[in-house]
Length: 418
Image 1 (cartoon, rainbow, N blue to C red):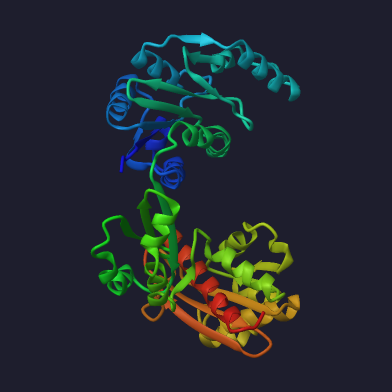
Image 2: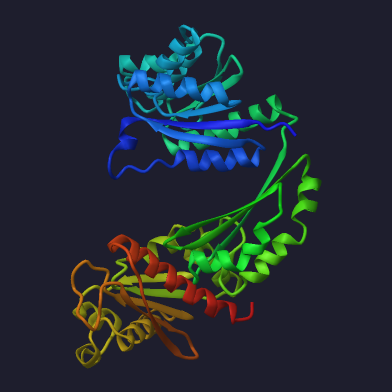
């Protein structure tokens, strides 16, 4: 079975700076796997002609397809076309149709196109233009020696749109005889990576064309299983029985089979059961609400999110009795329960979910260390409280707490009939 390799290169010095996360390669790697390609390497290179030349040359020497993102804009540090032109010996040619489209785009926005934007209409000779339906920077495909160089903008939503509308159909047509890859996701929460690995260890042995990988994140452990074969039917036969065994062994911690996130799972369960939710947050500062409202259609089940950081707010907004806070402290099970009950009663929803804790790095005591978080869940039956201790920095603790809270609600919803 012939293997079609692929490499991904992200360009831009900003991607090497602190606080800037490169995400295009993750998306592209998943899409390439779906299409039957084997991603063998990905790299990030700054806006340096010499380094870009080295990286692109090396990638083209060993990969059937090289996907390059970034460097297609109008500024001096947008070097991708220039470098590719020099490597391949294809001079840049002004494309009048592209230039006219750029001018029209600016005109429709009642703007005058800066002269430097005309650079975006330059394309290497004998390359295929990739139209940009949502932005100004077009991309291109260029066959050079034994590799296809596919250049896309670095803006994620532009890159994704152009991949789906042009690159995916091109790869399907150009490489019809490639293998079939099938990728399955199992998302878990509640056990460490080592425990998940132990449960699946014997299943990882003896499968030549099956790969099982795990990724530990603040939101849990993701298990990926990829089967490879000559056809969809061959892969289905290869994975027959294995997927069911994995699901069975992870059943108590499995929250999604697929790329679905916890907030989407919770939203779907609420919608299926025609139930509503109100949330009260302290240490997570609105993160649970942000995650829930990131799901389209969340207004069908989410009534409100109250961020009550101070003791006064917990009393005024949620009705938490001052004597409860005084007796147990704001970070405690009684307060978490009162917050959940208070937000549910005021909203008139089926569920009230609450969280209060110490995200750090300060505010801890010997009795209540950094990472200690209490949770409350109220419904028409009872008020339940629990707690957990999380590790990591402030951002990680907040994310872990939000995942734990949503999982608490998910388990309660599963006990309810549709």
